[in-house]
Length: 109
Image (cartoon, rainbow, N blue to C red; front, side):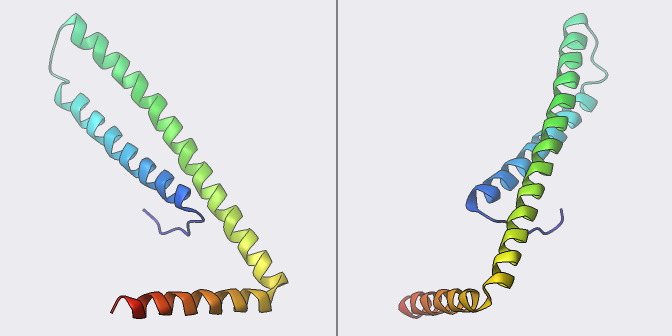
């Protein structure tokens, strides 16, 4: 998976959910392959439903992933525009955050 900038903690949880969902899909595909040799009407019917649902889930996963990437790009673009329009404000904010992080780190020692 490629490294992406993430805008909010909500985006992080979306990426984690997408990653976890992809694992579930992979496991389901593996289960379908492992049970391919089983016969019977019920097994065949259940495998068919699972296969259909798996395809739907893959489509939804791809859509969700595309949405996360699009929102991340929007956030990065907005941040870039703000920094270019307000360079000194951005420097001040960065310095303030650096001071706060430095204080928090020094407290922990």
